Image (cartoon, rainbow, N blue to C red):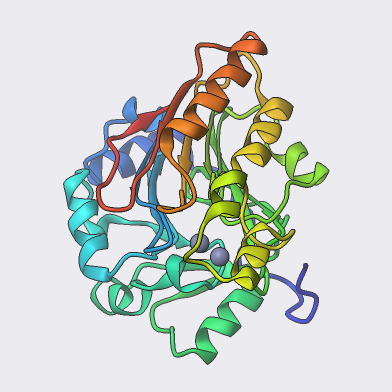
Amino acid sequence: MRNRRYGVPSVLPLPLPRASQRAETLAARGIHPQTARVIRFAVLGSGSGGNSTVVECGGVRLLIDAGLSAKQLCLRLRKVGIEPAALDGILLTHEHGDHVKGLKVFLKQHPVPVYATADTRRVLAINGIDGGVWKTFESAQPFRIGETAIQSFTVHHDAVDPVGFVISHQSRLLGLVSDVGHVTSSMIDRLRGLHGLFVEANYDDALLEADTKRPWPTKQRISSRHGHLSNGQVADLIREIAHPELGRVVLGHLSSDCNKPDLILGRLRTCLTEMGHPHVDLQCACQDEPTGWFDL
Ligand SMILES: [Zn+2]
Ligand SMILES: [Zn+2]
């Protein structure tokens, strides 16, 4: 869903800084130019209780979603060695509470620029989530934050204008996709050639079917084309996009009742081995603890 009412987006592609300017800028921010050449990311927490991932890329530090409490966001950022005030931006995938819960309080403490589609920004403002500096972009329109290139793309989920992201620097590509009801061919096209991927693997079909806690309409919503991805759908996606240079896949948003890390890891391991890519590192993020850094 593209927003047509807001005309020209407020985020526009920017020219790259010269090499000397870049080295000075990085040194001033305590980042060595060589470490700024890689992309690295850490999942601060993922699940229905809240989602947030930090990405460091080309000297830019970005938070993808802010679904943990502001206190936990700060605590977990510091745990992976990032001062909250040192963030260059917060990118939002969509407006659901488990992706924005800590945003309002976090912005009061650290007024970091927030990047969202115009519709997502509008819905959040209606719900009192405001403050800080907001920069809107149109889904599918590329933009830059410093030297880091960001490509968003539309995904199918029951939110107003949900997007996924591909973040790139010096030809290294990281894809981030959560939440998604089903995989489309245009989404597959966007995710080809990645070196790393964070993707939700919400439920196992049999465990969701057997679950007694969730009423039938909730199960229908989860498994609908605007709900979440099953392990089978994630395996199908990986089958489409795996290639020799895909180094790692991190799974997130696992349902605590309707999925188990062993199920999705085993399924993907079999799939990647059959495809001749047994080297791909597979990990599951969890709700209560940040992961370590994953380098690309
Ligand atoms: Zn959602
Ligand atoms: Zn979610």
